[in-house]
Length: 129
Image (cartoon, rainbow, N blue to C red; front, side):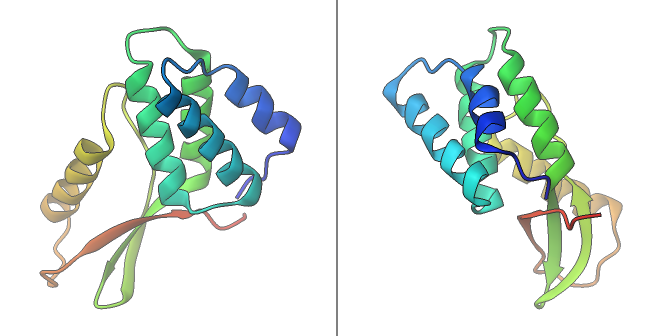
């Protein structure tokens, strides 16, 4: 994972303008997660909350945050406790978290020939190169 300095985190998040207290909470939560290397799924949830709240308004912060997540987070596809593959995280503007996850699972089911019926996905940080 590409670690950000406190200055870089603050600079990135300063570009996000919260519209409500809930969104301000998401920015503060995201700040803490980014500084401490918190759970990647929580980072993604905060990202989707913020990107949905700022949809329709030009915001360089959302785009920069998306690029950072796409460089540092991936989806781990598992079945029976075994990792089958990892997939780079790629989000599309206007997509919410639920739609993203449903599409990812659907694409995995349609594009792969896994024998296992119970497949799960989870967000994880990419291993350092």
